[in-house]
Image 1 (tube, one colour):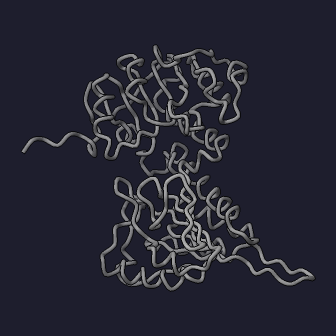
Image 2 (cartoon, rainbow, N blue to C red; image 1 turned 180 degrees about the vertical axis):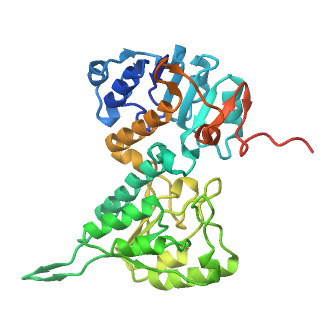
Amino acid sequence: MKIAIAAEADAAEPRVAGTPETVKKFIALGAEVAVDAGAGVKSGILDADYTAAGATLTKGAAKDADIVLKVRRPTADEIKSYRKGALVVAIMDPYGNDAALKAMADAGLVAFAMELMPRITRAQSMDVLSSQANLAGYRAVIDAAAEYGRALPMMMTAAGTVPAAKVFVMGVGVAGLQAIATARRLGGMVTATDVRPAVKEQVQSLGAKFIAVEDDEFKQAETAGGYAKEMSKEYQAKQAALVAEHIQKQDIVITTALIPGRPAPRLVTKEMVASMKPGSVLVDLAVERGGNVEGAKPGEVASVNGVKIVGFLNVPGRLAASASALYAKNLLTFLETMIDKKEKKLAISWDDEIVKGTALTRDGAVIHPNFMPKPAA
């Protein structure tokens, strides 16, 4: 059983899918581990660190591997070098990328999408969305503080008092909760909003104030999987009016709202941005999916009448060492469920809900029900 930790083809992706710690664990499970030379450098992991852990350093590590570990979905050129039947595990970004999924199926690859991991207790240690979003929420506050021209905590000095910054977090999933906690640690006055009633207590437990229109529709606004439902136009209008009034008083706004498989919902309009004080900062963590903030530009810090809109891409990658360590551990715990520890070989249980929830392609076909080709009418 040979496992390859592949270098990322995208030069803008600094994360890596394996660390010396996970290499040692894979070897203990009976695997040979090959790592592309230079794969971990942007995450602060030297080639010598991998070899010291027992890995073989090579170029084109994935070409004869049984299992290929990556951060991002392999490109068409990468797929050509993989052997038929290889398992490829990565963040696959499957929504709207039917051609890429078909290419993996046509190549005979068994592809697993880590971001489709079921939200069940047993899979918490494999949940890449949570591990990476946690870091994104933290980094969003750090980036906001860097762009904000004032201090975040209240400071009482002989020369006068600096007021605490008002921070508003929109969307209270994993990223939002970490943003709240980080902003509170830095001394900000924090408020937060979400359409899911269950998060109100979580927000309050972190010392922040919850802001929402709490009507009957709000009380039903959560899917069985724990995601936010899309709200009615009437509710959206009421919530937007409340947010518009609140947002003009804020110094920092962080938006984190994403609905899997859909464009990011627009939470902050250009009129709301215009109502904010010059020097205010918005950080849009959904910019890669179209953005929550009108006027956000992917990969840029836009300025609108003195208000900054931060649209950095791949925010977890801005903490590459931490993000790689967590992601590599997610992959390890996922693969451990597929390896027979006595026989020291692959033994995939295709009836396991974790496997069924994440498997995209197998035996030359796309097999995930959400992405299977629609039959002709």
